[in-house]
Image (cartoon, rainbow, N blue to C red):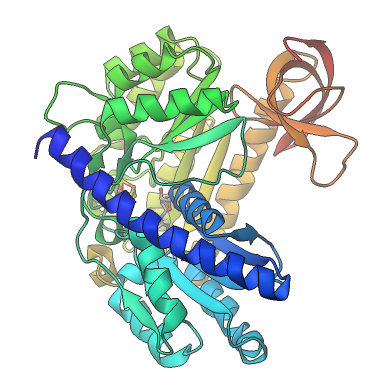
Length: 479
Ligand code: 5AD
Ligand code: SF4
């Protein structure tokens, strides 16, 4: 399909959905004139940044339909759960939360309860909701979010649970309405899906194959964000380093970064997630050359033992990972490194786990997101044999956290008495008299001073903790 043909289809899709949005909005307005009641929607998001970004689109569409956002179930006319299925605990949490709405639905029969996102791309989860949670009104998946108004309108008029799931990914629909949680920084999805099929991971099955957005659409979106006051973008994709491979033009992730770096008004560029196997020298070069790209890289290594990395289908060895880290550290001094680690993958012995600890000690990550392996039906790892007990896994997991926390704290100590640029996120949630923000390296800083959301200020670090830093504004770059 040519770009023009895609744009035409995109236009038709948006037009149809927009007509439905207008119809629902009109109905809500008519009801308001009769009853004086404003309508509210609550969107509850589980899981990763991609889900947050999808939820911002759902909120955007709901807003145009006339629903204000609420965090209160009792006030809500619509409650949507955007689900995650990467690990079992996210699924269990969802079932608990949907179950808890049964009585509310009895009390307010007009309440619309919807469940969408990754979990709904799995047949067993949809069956479970259909059978055990009959108070759910609509179910849809990850591939048809753009048709939410159409699905929602049907659900408003149906008594049974409406299910609308696409098994395969379609083309990317651009320009959906978005209600962003914050103005000064934004998530920008640059690609969808994943081709890697790490043997433990459900994502490729529920999010489909890699599809890159057109660079022009991404640049246009970021320029519009700047107009709206945005200063920091985080580019999102399951594996941003393979951006562009499916496009029919010679344009890769590094090229995209160069382009975004030249957009006036953007001050900071972040991205996630990077797969170590695709981390190229060209990317390291662009990171060291472009002043707006923050000195932070999230580079999951998952496990240290080469035997386990092979079983995981990660396509790199411990030595290759360490070599890449060495190159990155040389090219970008002071870079903060974060990672994801899985403990207790089938077949992992405590001796294998020592290799994980070895990487943690050698690399000295600023932060690690650590998970105990969770069996996902349908993935190759689900068929593999466990070797060690759950107790031993938990013991290793606790050791890992202890080692990592000590390193995080030590790295944070090196920030003490130095001055860092902080992008102000606003008042701290726990103390309204204190501001909070992040350094370019991604550290949370709580600080005293006078500044507005979105300002870049210089903060002197006075005190450090494992997860955050405390400080005081010394000189404002901009107010
Ligand atoms: N069990 C535990 N952790 C998992 N992750 C992905 N799949 C699983 C699983 N089955 C972790 C990986 C990934 C992060 C987003 O979630 O570390 O990088
Ligand atoms: Fe899952 Fe691996 Fe793809 Fe990440 S790269 S989403 S862990 S399959």
